[in-house]
Every structure is written in structure tokens, then in C-alpha cells.
Image (tube, rainbow, N blue to C red; front, side, top):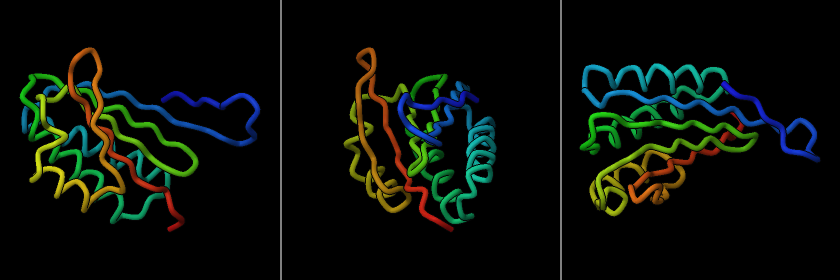
Length: 127
């Protein structure tokens, strides 16, 4: 886990975790375990942690690669989960978007090295 403070800010902190795992269904619990630990450390409500875990599992199910990377960035006000690489068009899949939009505050597709990634954002409101 890396702690970083932006220059010129007082008490502003981000935590970054990068996890690269096989997409095998039997190993997806590793991702939920890590997200549960992060959520607990950040004092997120059980419901928010559960929603984030379900969203991550939904995206992992859509992955066609053997390996996927999850990057968690926890700032003062929000938590971002970047997941990729994913098959082209994953971010525009209507069924997946409908599920994700009910679980997290925003879903943002992006490109890295010509591959699709999704960023799931969750507000860190007081619990």
C-alpha cells in the first residue's frame, strides 16, 4: 500500500493498491477479500463494501483474458477501482452497465495501451 500526499495539501492522503490475479472463478474471492479489507480500513459501510465487491465480480465475469489487474485508489472523498484489461466494448455493454450503475456512483471506460479498462467510483460519504 502506498501513501502519498499531494504537495501543498494538508492531511490529503491517497492509498493505492494494485492486484493482478488470474480471472479463474475460483480465485475471484481474492479480489473480494482485498476490497473488503480496503473497505473496512476506510470505514465504509457494509452495504458500500458489498456493492463494490459485487461490481468488481460483475466486471471480472466479463473479462476474457487469463489475468486482470485491479487498481484501488482511495482518496479523502472517493474510492476508485480500475479494472482491466477487458474485452473491447465491455464499458458499453448495456446489461453490465445497468448492473454497475446500481452498485457504484459512476462507471467510466478508458483505454490503456489499446485495451479497455473500467473505472468504478464510490463516494466515501460518512457512515
